[in-house]
Length: 119
Image (tube, rainbow, N blue to C red):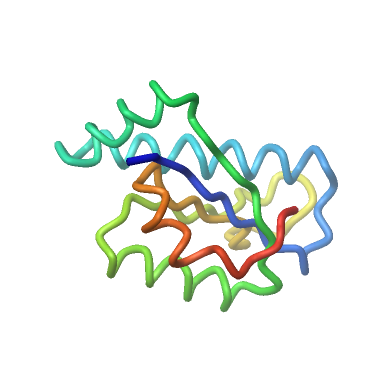
């Protein structure tokens, strides 16, 4: 079984490259921290690390699209994070910017994200 993490970023916000990079990092790290809280997910994190920590960064066109993906990931029992910006630079406080799904079995992540385009 292969493992993967998908990070999904809103493109409608027109964030700069550095801002996008920071939001992707926040989402990725937070999802791993969440995954370390449950035994089965800890095992997934370990296997994902041993395989090279496969990640993809994908586009979402709106807040509602991100929230729908996040809800579906939770319902599937996958580790996931939801990132809201602090509002210190480019965005108003609490702007939803990104989510991460996984690390989890690649097939489970792909069921939710395979229709999205790469960022």
